[in-house]
Amino acid sequence: MSILAPITSTYAGILGIYYLKLTFDIGTERRKAKTSIGDGSQQLIQKIVDAGKSGKTENFSKIDYLSYDDLLRSIRAHGNFAEFVPLALLFSLICEINGISSKLLTGILFTLTVSRFSHATGLRASNVGRKIGVSLTLLSILILSILSIYIPNKDTIFNLFKN
Image (cartoon, rainbow, N blue to C red; front, side, top):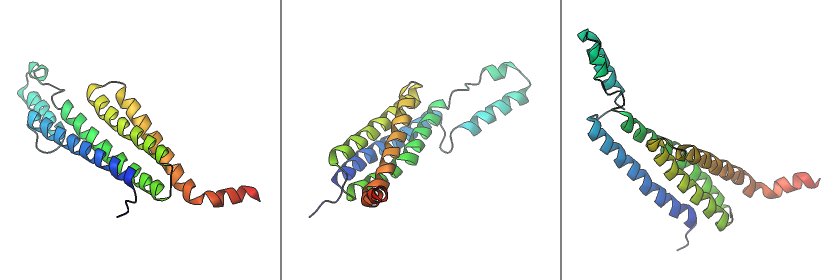
């Protein structure tokens, strides 16, 4: 049996497992926030409306405005992952099938994987990891996009400049 894309397959598996971890994180935060649907914004708005209806301004100070913050951050870490990783893996597969250097592809996918871990961690901790993660993710996708164009068309590209 010939394996066509062992590098992409390996990293797709690693990233798939991490995606499940991000999914379970949302479930954990939903239980903590007692919110089965949405990001908690409706519940927070309802608390504000109820405090306003009471006519007592001190009721506003009793509201924990950050009570759904961890849930929202988990939802966005999961969503951001789902927005970027499939596209990167598609470009990776195209590159691998078209004969990209295995060392180059491994380096790019390793960077992508670390960037996704960094982004999710940074999003929850409000640290520089988020910025590093998104920057390296975008860089990985840019490189894979360019290589997806270049590798199958390199002869045509070189011929354009020969004439």
